[in-house]
Length: 228
Image (cartoon, rainbow, N blue to C red; front, top):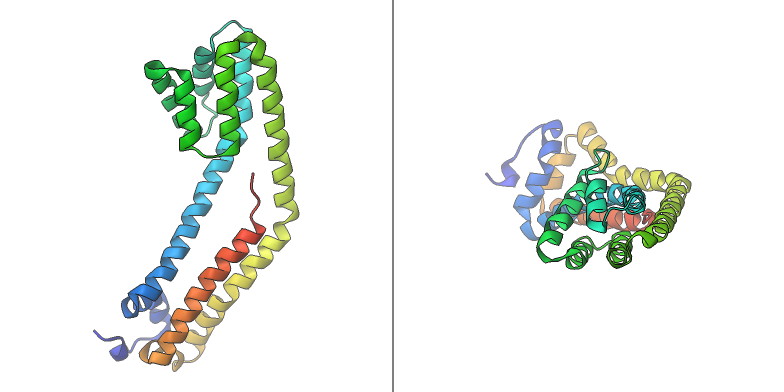
C-alpha cells in the first residue's frame, strides 16, 4: 500500500511512524533508527562494564586474602571468582580466565581477558595478577593497594555523576521535547499526519527531524557522559 493512500487516525499513525519512515527511505530512516538502537545498546554495555569495574576491588581483596593464607594465585583467583555476589559478566570473565589458565598458563589467560574486555581497570587488574603469579604472597599488599585505588576512582566517578545529574536531566528534557511536540500536533490536528507522511515535503521534514534528533541525542549523551 502506498503511503499516500494511508488514511488513519493520528493516534494510530504515531505508533507506525517508524515503519512509514523506514519504508519510504531505507537509507535515511533506517540509519536514524539504527543510531538510536546502537545508542541504547551502548548504554547497556556501559552499565554492565560499570558494574564489573565496581566489583574488581573486592576480587583483588579476596585474592590478596588467599595469598596471605598460603594459596597460589590461580587457586586464590578461583576462590574469589566463586563469590555469589559478583556481577554475572565478571563471574563469566573470571571463569574463562581460570579455564584458559589450566591450558596455557595464567599469564596468557589474563592477557586475553584484558584484550577481550578493553577497560583500563581490567588491564590494571590483569597486569597486577600476572605479576602476582610470580611474586606470590609478598604481592598481597600491592593487590590491596590497587583495590583501594580502584575504589577511590569509582567513588570519584560516582560523585561526578551525581553533580552532573541536573545537566543530564536537562539533556533528556531537551531531547524529548521535539518528539512530544510532534505527538501533540498529531493528536490535535488531523491534517498534520497526512501532510507529514503523504507529501514529499512532509516526509523530507520527518526524516530530517529524526536524523537530527538522533544526532543531537548522541551529542548530548557524549557531553554529559561520566566515564568510570
